[in-house]
Image 1 (cartoon, rainbow, N blue to C red):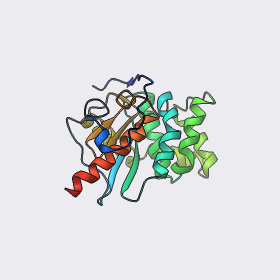
Image 2 (cartoon, rainbow, N blue to C red; image 1 turned 135 degrees about the vertical axis):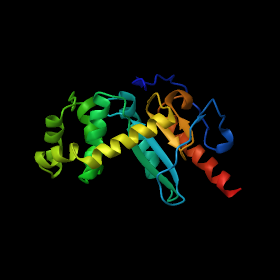
Image 3 (spheres, one colour; image 1 turned 180 degrees about the vertical axis):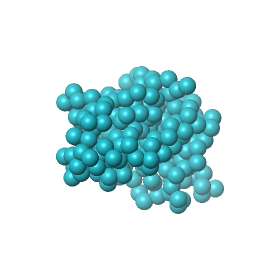
Length: 210
């Protein structure tokens, strides 16, 4: 069973790390024992963030990660995958996919993080989540229906299966092309994680060009 562990990392810097040639397997990133099939239907390079809304490191990663995502070219497909490690983790995963189903996720995602870490709101029961969702143009009834929908449950189960296949034991984590894992400890810091992921994207491009 996956243990709900938040990775602890050292605040080390990796100045100048910007190219695939600079990377060292086992030092800056890990290769997954069980690579997963990517979910993009084209030839774009998939970068997946595994996160939990209740994780302070995940919250602190959002700013540098969002800045990095905004700069990526069209051949990079970024997606988020909520961690499913039981309890509140699963509740927040249901909230993520319900917001996605209701088409309010883009507006709500950052605010959900902020409410938990800056306002002290746990948002761990359906009533509280539905009330929160109601500020984004949906009714509380619609929110509760989405939280309990078959489609949302299926997406949570799929995320759980992918996490088990990846053998992820903590968050935040970035998975590049379904094969390469970047953690705060391997990257040296939260701020370095997008930089390492970017170098791995470059590496995948080079692999595909050979």
